[in-house]
Image 1 (tube, rainbow, N blue to C red):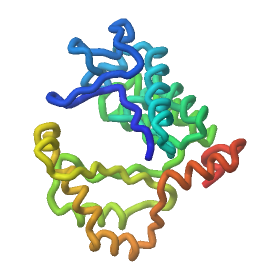
Image 2 (tube, rainbow, N blue to C red; image 1 turned 180 degrees about the vertical axis):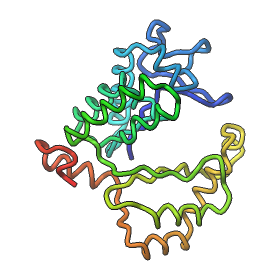
Image 3 (cartoon, rainbow, N blue to C red; image 1 turned 90 degrees about the vertical axis):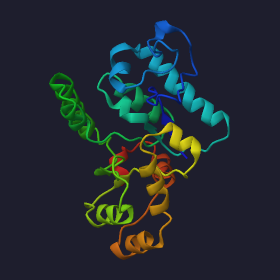
Length: 233
């Protein structure tokens, strides 16, 4: 189980906020006292020191609850912004935890922010030079289409490139709460059902893909604390 470091709260009827502060001066809060809805609002308003304290508090709460944390990632990829990424990396390295940071520049090119995309591209090159990036690719079944989920996932499995790929899914059971909270609830339920499917399991076995969890990556990282992440794989 990892910690999904969170700085944004996108839903309209289900909101959450920081655990480290309720001070508006932190820039972490919107007008209603919750996290901002979208990453762009976090990037524009949040104080970097407040972000560092908040993500550390979230990890500390998980550890304090007795969770054997295996990795870090970032809700809505908020922490992959060039201004925030160093804090994300520093926290992961402090606790020797693998983390997700893939395709930085593509994210901001898609948003049409050329200046930030250029900064992200420079940071990607620096991370590659340091052998920090873990994953060769990131794949995710779309959240805007729920039909034929097993075949969609089989196509993802069958077209993986050599190397370590993260498959990001959003499985959830069909409940009234989920339907009220998430406009894309059908896709989340479809993920849940697809990854319980024997048909999909058989396809994974047939493909020769090796399924691995974050615990193995974390333990390998900790076994060679002086090595870079890339050198371990």
